[in-house]
Image 1: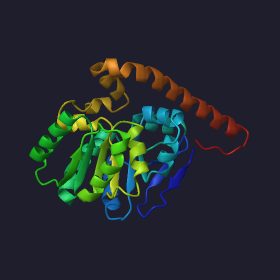
Image 2 (image 1 turned 120 degrees about the vertical axis):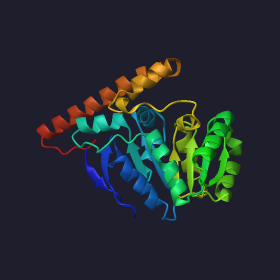
Image 3 (image 1 turned 90 degrees about the vertical axis):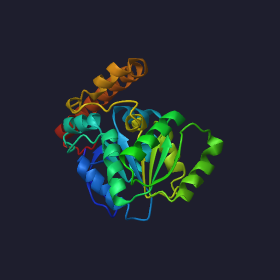
Length: 265
């Protein structure tokens, strides 16, 4: 476990968590980092990690490498808890949906052209309708639902580039959204790309965001109550694995310290 410093032009501390450099930032600081990323020429991949994303990174080949190479990785509560247990606490629970919803009005204010990629067509249309109503000055460079096969990927990536979007939100679920971004990183065009999972449903008004009182670590329980059919199996698999993985790493650190050996998560 250790603290690193970003090597990019935008500077922020990082905590190494299970080999992944996680940005040690608050929500407000994450938004400011995005603002600075927009002033740079290259693509900046923003990834949100939670217990499920760490599980995927541990079980799906290639995902862990993507997390290590992303320009900014922010963590939800699971990573905040684990970092505290492992001795280098993160500043805050930077929720993916919270960052997504915070960036929309900022992009309107900053005049940033945005492309929305993902979700079902009906959800996407509801999102666009709500965005046009609530953020009338937001520049919508383009939109495309997330239901397409591999043969269409290159054309969609070219469409995104041609749209002139400076920011791209991808809501295709993990690890598909991460693989898409990294595969077309050199040709996509936007300077900021963020995977947002199911957050389009929240902005579209189909699902409500978890209330603030759940952000202390029980947001998963709130979501489980709303959607037990889809989430119960995932939580039963992921949460015990993540707790055990964290406690095992803590034991390794303690044993290493006892033996005088440096260690990192």
